[in-house]
View 1 (cartoon, protein in one colour):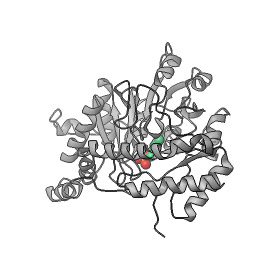
View 2 (tube, helix red, strand yellow; view 1 turned 120 degrees about the horizontal axis):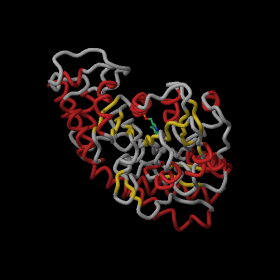
View 3 (cartoon, protein in one colour; view 1 turned 30 degrees about the horizontal axis):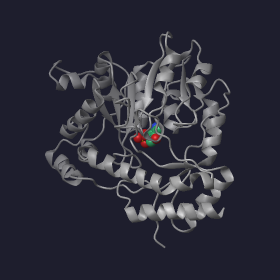
View 4 (cartoon, protein in one colour; view 1 turned 180 degrees about the horizontal axis):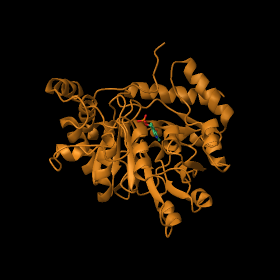
Length: 380
Ligand SMILES: *Cc1c(COP(=O)(O)O)cnc(C)c1O
């Protein structure tokens, strides 16, 4: 039986040549020549003040938490329907976490739910652009308007090169973060980036990346020796991985075009059967452009979803579920000071099914995925 995996990393251009160049060039630690080139693509694309490559998106979120001096007594609001890191990066700084529900259209954080969780202890709100579609940032801005001291950090692990009204996802918050983990759109094994959108945060971000030292100013020739200045950690990406990432980012148009074509193919094949079989496909609101991170289907209920997943696995098609809600997880309860129900999260999490989705999935395999899905869904 031929297995179609859920995800398979692939090369898009000159990654291997660049990795060799990085090793032979002798600068394999952080802040090397490929780091500079990859970061500049990101900085320019997002119109940011600075893009800092990190060892992961989790680390970039930790840097954001440190840059905001989040600590004990502070509260951070995150969606319940997200990856653990969105919450963990702030919890480990000592913050209490409150979990907002998502809204049913984009599956992004619901502004009304955020509003119900606001009080004087809230220091940051961390929206996620699920599947690469922008969440309701205008709604969020309206809810936060007139409240001082609350910063937005976009966890943009899914949304690189997506936009709302032509404004890039990741350019709205004071900070945003990216992931280049092997399951994401652009990859280097493990990696991430912190996007800095305010000029007065840039210098300190470099210090935190460099173990709390002013090494970056030293390398620029701004100081004549470098020394310990602040908190921080070893957050910088190796230039070997930055070389891999640069090879991917150079091919961003081609990668996005492939993902878009695959998304539209699934949509075309499945949409005619949605009503009859009781499922719904992803919605991209008017004005939004998707980063095409994934293709999900919302099934009628949890029983149907689980049976379809099992049926597809039996014939070698590796569809999967997604986030287990954080608000009811042991970690979520440990780090949260209030119990907040998230009914939409619970419902969506139980019904959501993701189809295999990766850059090099062939048209024939995509057709087999769609046909298998329909056949199994028809039978349950
Ligand atoms: C993948 C992901 C992360 C974590 O990314 P790493 O680079 O693996 O740390 C964080 N948030 C979201 C929404 C993700 O999808």
